[in-house]
Length: 285
Image (cartoon, rainbow, N blue to C red; front, side, top):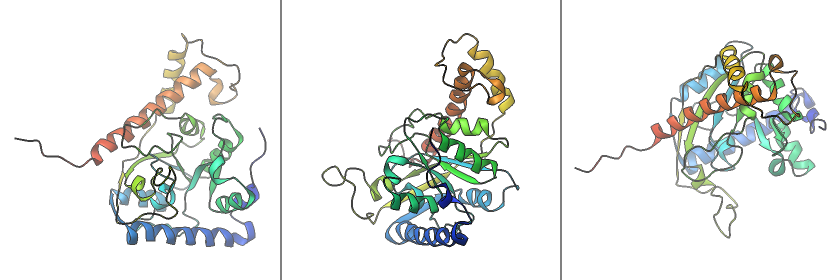
């Protein structure tokens, strides 16, 4: 695989950190206007997210995962009242689609100083930029991923998750705190098919945004590895392309079992939050 796209622009000390501060502040201010002025945003359990962003144990990474309903989910989902969205040091790192956010040098520079990591769709879970995401977790940073892998604007069950997020959880030397989040309403603020199959030029207004933050998930990785080993003994799934030098020498079949199990846990947690977030409808008498 090639090197890391504009990695120099993603460094905290790039030009003294000034470009990052300017971009995070400007984007955060825009997001606050979209979430709280143009639209109405309600949050359930937001304090759990704020606490983990501000004061989790030193060196312990935070990995938030959510559904993906529009191109505005990030950053507007962090713009609810009380969240430090304009703080460049506390801001999340996020995996972003290379073909959308990194089309040219100007966009690449903007998203890089905004703490975005380019991911090549179809590039596999061991592509170089996934290693960069792993480096951020190793530093104890906060990383956000959309494990469905693409925008899914329909109010439908969570799709089968891509394995990249699971691989980061399994490979991180310090297991990250994994926090599931579900949101609704962004598909109305920035609909995918607004006019002639295109998104609107600006965010829409007078919509209701709802964000539901779950509770931290725990993964007993030694136990999950053992389970993956036992489940994979009868499997012949192997492309011969996956390295065996990671995860304690697990072969490809065991890696696949491990990632599938972790992904299923996350998908279940997101789906439970989705059910919780639906409005209660009183049954007819």
